[in-house]
Length: 120
Image (cartoon, rainbow, N blue to C red; front, side, top):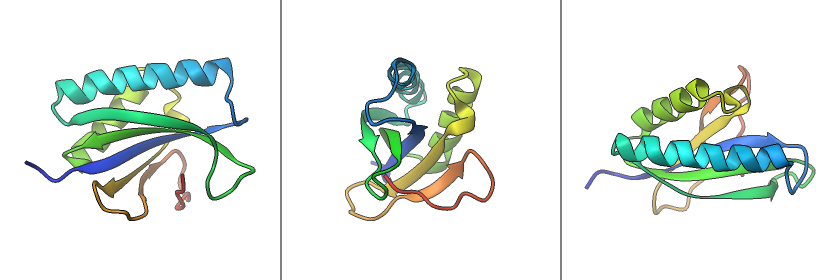
């Protein structure tokens, strides 16, 4: 069995509960990623959380969690699926962490240059 990783796709939100569109986006992203990761045999979607950022209670985020086997291939797949499906690709951050080890997430992709921090 290959090594596994947590992969999280994060969207910024304007409120803790999110708008109707934020909930639609969560559902669509989870649906598209579940299908794409399964088809590529790279992993699966493992849930989400939505609300206040742990590190800054004044900021809000939608986090979609996936468990994947091939880190780089999965990141490329997620980016492609979100871009081609027009699911707010220009607002995402993607971070990973080894599965089963309590570490911090490492930012692997950010929607704009210069962004280097990632927190849940």
